[in-house]
Length: 402
Image (cartoon, rainbow, N blue to C red):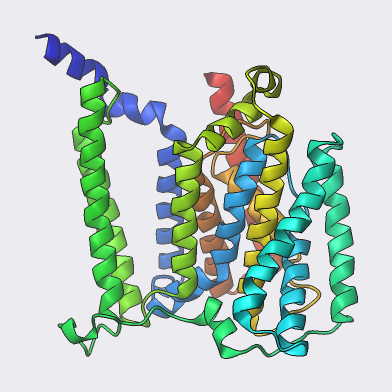
């Protein structure tokens, strides 16, 4: 009887669970609805293998930068300079590769270090000199855009070596081609096997976490809800994986993006530094009194953002096969919007990696779908602005209601 009461306490009804997690699952539902909406309006073009690949290539850098931007927003700051850092590091990589002839294996880590130094330069003023991040990064946006024009002399530089281009345009080889049961349909069997394996691992770890929660008396989601959620995720993942496997499989940049998402999810949920960033964003004075070095932590978040912006800059340059002075214009708005749509709070202390990723995907699907439909940039900006406003309003409404 005691065990039964305990189980009831740790497993709420589906209605109660959804009410308590409306933001997280509302985002997933919104993403699915938007995808189905554009799939219908584009006469099935959205889910075609070639377009799914383009969707990944077009939005990978937004997702990557959203990971860093989320940490900055959670810490209670903002970074307006990421678009200019993208252009600046992309321009530096082009000069080193094309003009100086340096091998890409040296250029890539060197540009990541330079991106980190750029982030450190801005983080110093924010963390140790207490200048508002908005002002520092606004200045950085102008400075690094100007430097980009200066180093590129107002003209594009390219093309790049094939090895460097593969960072963005390459695909993971089919290591299991000899096991392919449908060689006429599936062109990359390895990618499909990986998707099925990841789905199986997600189900296994989901069940394991439920058992752990039961042992510790922690709240579990209703099993019927868990089973339905896993069934939907499995169906969607295998469908998308199959679509990609009928084209060229996984783009290299998808692998990079997936590894970064896994790493940052671990950092924000399981590491000490992640918990400290959330504590600092929630209440900086209390965090400082508890022994957290908030200056150093703020500094690190900007260094991290610089590194990810540099990576995004190289990915964009590799995809376009040239570095241009206007690369990254307006990217900071898409990245910040992705974080806020994903549930981050402008006051800091709140936000999840999964939310930022879903927010970036929502922005990407809308951009892609509206482009396929032939809508002009004016309508696209209008729709994205309204979606951002609606997301922030929804967040504020839920907080006031609570």
